[in-house]
Image (tube, rainbow, N blue to C red; front, side, top):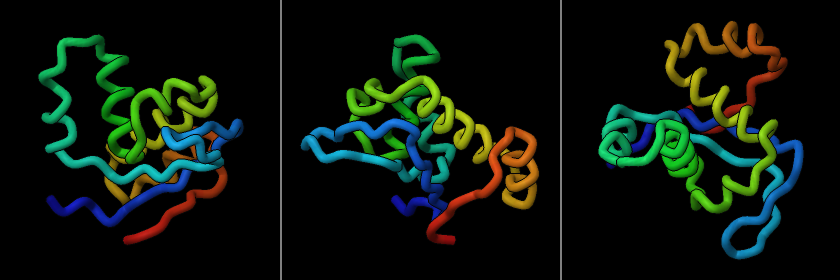
Length: 108
């Protein structure tokens, strides 16, 4: 499967450790596709858990790694997910409205 080129880097307020014990100070989240939404729609857990599982997948991390995030850091990931739901030309304005000053990206 070919993934979208847009990837956003989210700098964490509080570092966490990945599955191998490496310290993470930022996470990269790729733009989701419809496939991602469908892949997790069949789970029988709560919507919050489905969102966590999907966001972990979009960041290339294990769910248990993201469970160690502070709420403030997880909110940053949720916010980026919301930003990915709007057309690319409107994303910068939405980020500004949400209180984020500078958008970081790689790829494109």
